[in-house]
Amino acid sequence: MEADNDLSYDQYRDLAEFRRQIRQFLYFSEVTAKEHGIEAQQHQLLLAVHGLPEETKPTIREIASRLFIQHHSAVELIDRLEKAGAIARHPGTQDKREVWVRLTPAGRAILRKLALTHRTELERSGPELAKALNSVLRQSRRTAAS
Amino acid sequence: MEADNDLSYDQYRDLAEFRRQIRQFLYFSEVTAKEHGIEAQQHQLLLAVHGLPEETKPTIREIASRLFIQHHSAVELIDRLEKAGAIARHPGTQDKREVWVRLTPAGRAILRKLALTHRTELERSGPELAKALNSVLRQSRRTAAS
DNA sequence: TCCAAATATATCGTGATACGATAGAAAATT
DNA sequence: AATTTTCTATCGTATCACGATATATTTGGA
Image 1 (cartoon, rainbow over the protein chains, first blue to last red):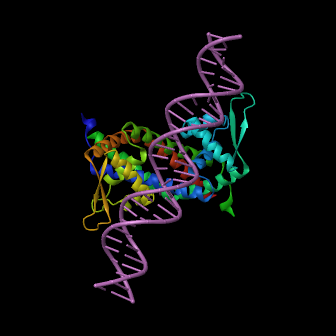
Image 2 (cartoon, rainbow over the protein chains, first blue to last red):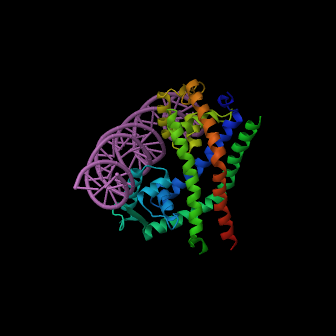
Image 3 (cartoon, each protein chain N blue to C red):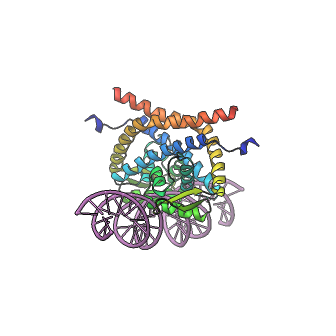
């Protein structure tokens, strides 16, 4: 029953360090989003909508799927983003059940600033994150080979 | 004012894909933690405590710092973990203000299972995450050089 | 020594988030 | 035409994180 073996302390440490790197990036993201007047999850929704393939309809269900949340959680996020003036709902024309979500100019401005800031942060912290991930995977391969 | 330039659609897409990879991993983590009876943040706390350098005291403040949360948020997490039987508080002996946090055998068992599962998931999805990160950084370097 | 400042933990109230359960409208299917 | 499916929305609940505040202990100066 090798699958039940415990991990070494080094492996726990590597996993902890990987999660710490991710958490540090997410913390940066939370703080930066709030500085621009929105919450981190609202930023994620803006980015997901703006980064959608052009042939993909920006429906609530599609967005929820890309954020790995239930559709009604996306509804609530969109309620708050609409109130903040960052997005607008457009009732579907062909399929009247659908609601298409578009960034307003204000929403685009916020996203642009956040994207630039995040790219800069990733230039700084990305290599450390990659290193931490590689440590986990290296350990993993070593164990698998033993 | 080059810093104010907008990003290209490709750069937004790369950022969105990177965040999607992270979010997918975190979603896996949330679901798996819940399957083992704890919340994702509680899992993070267990891992942070267990992955602590041996010379570091497992105080609430230290743990909060590693999770990038306020100390009273850590207090609340620890309340819930204590109720779940995964950790125990030990009042400090030298400094009686401190509380040292230790995993119970039940907590260690949960963490071990989660660590093994997460390592397996990272073997599967880690390369895609690294690829997405590299795409962001490549784009970034290209823009900086232009 | 004694007392103010700093440190460590805890409590309370609030807001954002995500969920399950449920509902209603529109489209698709039978 | 009636049923089922799909899409969005609402309601109640739990976790999480925070700011403000409180309490206990230790530290550092007067």
